[in-house]
Length: 219
Image 1 (cartoon, rainbow, N blue to C red):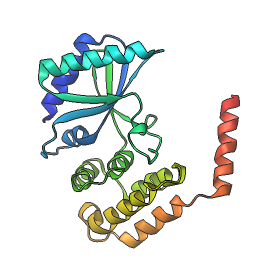
Image 2: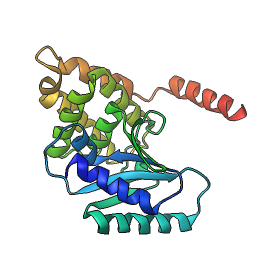
Image 3: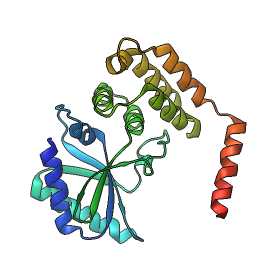
């Protein structure tokens, strides 16, 4: 898949979907926009209508996506909440997603680089590590940013059998791929230590966060 094919897909989608729609690209398509030449065969994205929506809107959007696929040959998968695609909680991603392009009333955004990296580490296949490196180089991803976002995800995720494998994948990425992304001066032990520190479930920190959330709900 190429950048042009992604643009063709959303252009076709905009011809049949005329309401405001917020789209966040994930997966290999986002890596293609950063310059990847690794084959990817579909477009994965979160899609949220701009106004109030009901179950029928999901059916209408699915129909519009299917028509865009028929017109362009680009397969697509979407969800209204990509956080539900994994057991490890995504860092806050809607607030930090960066605008890429608009197609009619469809606004397409890209995940902030450290959040994108976490989304790939939730699965953690070798091709996901390749995508992190490519997108990281293109966007200036810092190791501290990745440690912060991954630590946030661990801290906020419910305890489960899937959490430890995620932690091991983060450690693995820093240890095996860190210098490939950040250069010879990168220190994996330092990055892993910061990640572990930020992953700790601090009762005091959680009480402060809960207090802030309560205050915001009262505003």
